[in-house]
Length: 397
Image 1: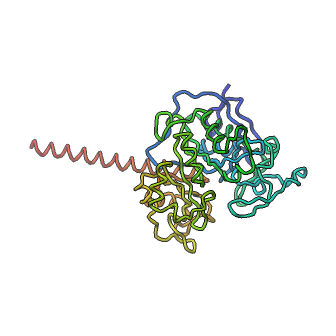
Image 2: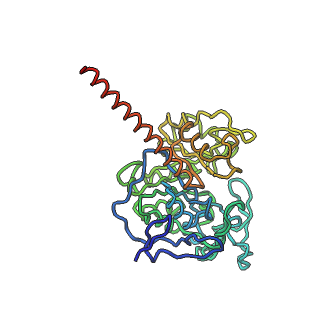
Image 3: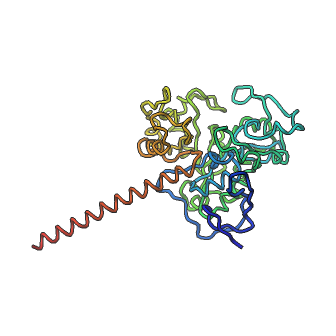
């Protein structure tokens, strides 16, 4: 049996679970089924990629099944996730190494003794770390919205999901949807989680992708069926997994003040031409923090750097992060309009993809501007045909 849900299309009845929440009538998203979809609409490759950062987390708590399913509904090309590990070695989707900011762990008094202090990227961090909880314990927690100025109605409604559940969501979509998982904090994970046979975090990460059929270099036949970019801030992890898979990889680049977590290299070193020439042997692109591409002073954009041009000269894509609709995150040049920001980065700076918390907004912008371009081309072609007709007529007179 199938039923239709406004804005979501036709769904199998067994997949729809609704929750009545105050003033909202939105569906309470379940995990998807394993149902196959033949003749899926392929991934678009003719315009920059719409990368749903932690799902549609501008609307729904980040890295949850609901956030990812919402992002797919809104038109994301890729759904992005941070991959960490539980104490018992199960890979999970969660951004922070601690649970404090985006779960209700503090309400679970029986976990009060789990608080620890570990060194994370050279800084002592205190909190409830994912690596000190089993998957069963993590599943007992509920995820909350990170920012207080975003919709709070879904707080406490969704659980942490595993890497495999995340993959299932993408594969179950009715069109081809890519995944964009990050090897998150590998130094910390490898220090605290041990797998049988001496396997590392990176080994388990790639093993999971292979289990679900992810293979092939960028734009290959296999890749187009199941697209994926593997991302990490740790260069050694990307170099290491290059011996395990030919799937495309992206080197993430932090702010100018933050060195790489594994090699302690500066921003200036890893964005130098010699380093880009080296790393292009292992990655297909870079993912820089957007304010390092175009510096900002007093919330105003300055002159763009040459990072995008130099990356392109090394045949590297550029996927900056993170684009958010709220005024708190929009630089004053954009007049509180996220579409002006999208236009600047896509058409002026010329990047190849954007990480955004609002996949629906970026999708709408790209659809509308594509239609406008097509209309202009159509009008131009019509005028050209009329000119040819007049020319032929004149030559026959």
